[in-house]
Image 1 (cartoon, rainbow, N blue to C red):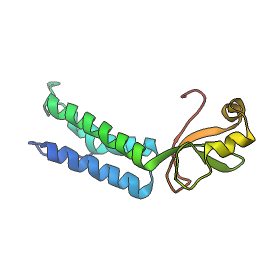
Image 2 (cartoon, helix red, strand yellow):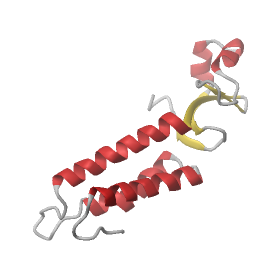
Image 3 (cartoon, rainbow, N blue to C red):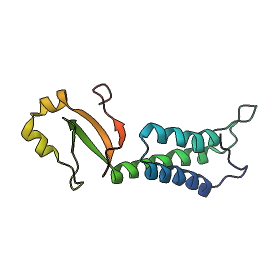
Image 4 (cartoon, rainbow, N blue to C red):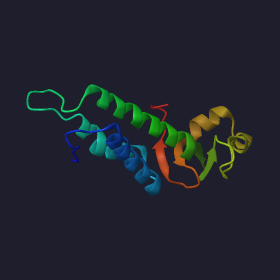
Length: 140
């Protein structure tokens, strides 16, 4: 587990989060791996407590880290991730201009109900077949 120095700054938090996100983009990590990386590098160290149970770092630093992480993940998903449905080994995207066949093409083959029943959905890194998050009927 990584620890922060005693007097942590907002810049320290931003630096660690940015490092985690950069690694995620470089290696095209899935959402679970990113969450584990952020947990190890940011969340666990910022939420450390003294033996008395009191937090070692101020509440505003803990809140700032949570907000900054959420903003960076949101930015990553909006800019570098696309939602796709897989049908017969081909990914069909809901985004425009990513180079994959789009949903209009898939809807020429299947009805909306058939897409929902027969196709696996997921979020993929744009330009790759690397999975970011797998959708299931239970988590939709």
